[in-house]
Amino acid sequence: MGAGPPPLIFTPGSGAATLNQFFRESVGACELGGHRAMLVTNFRGQVPRSLPDNVKVFSYLPFSKILPRCSCLVYPGGIGTMAQGINAGVPPLIVPHAHDQPDNAFRIKRLGLGEFIYPEFYKARQVTRLLRRVMGSPATRRYGATHVGSLNSEAAVERACNLVEGLQVRDPCIHFRTTGQRSQGCRIHERNKG
Image (tube, rainbow, N blue to C red):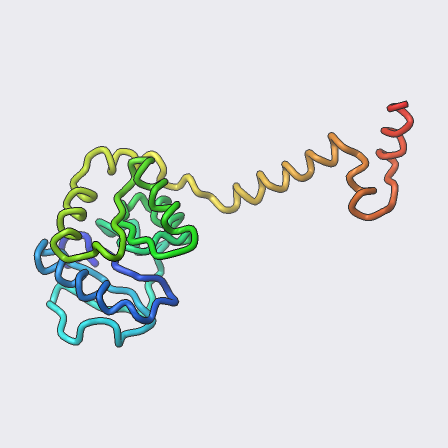
């Protein structure tokens, strides 16, 4: 990692097995832009056989540890990787394919956190241009820095638990509706109502 400028990460997602073109164009963009890169895939066969010295392939990388040290994350826009990227403050270039990915890509762009490109337009020259824009934008870096560490899963669970527990306080009969057994609070609530 420390042998040069921060690398880019390119990943089509853990289940993608037929995205040869994604990796071919990604390697081409690295050659055009002179970028160091880490290609992450469980399916090595979709990566070009011949790679420049500045591009390496991995079947797995611990994103929570690696992303803060990268210059850009190129990926499909899945919610888990998106959360890790936002938490790390690394600007993304999203290549959405299906499900929630197009919506996630749109939201990232609207928030000023990164860019997206649809797969049919994912060509080395276009990717190089977008990478330059994403990595060179002071606004993207500034917006990204404001969100670093903001996605705290422990805090989210704590907040959800507090909200659920708050329902019990506001509605003492919720226990009855979920279990069929009246609680002391429900009996008092019913007496006070009327």
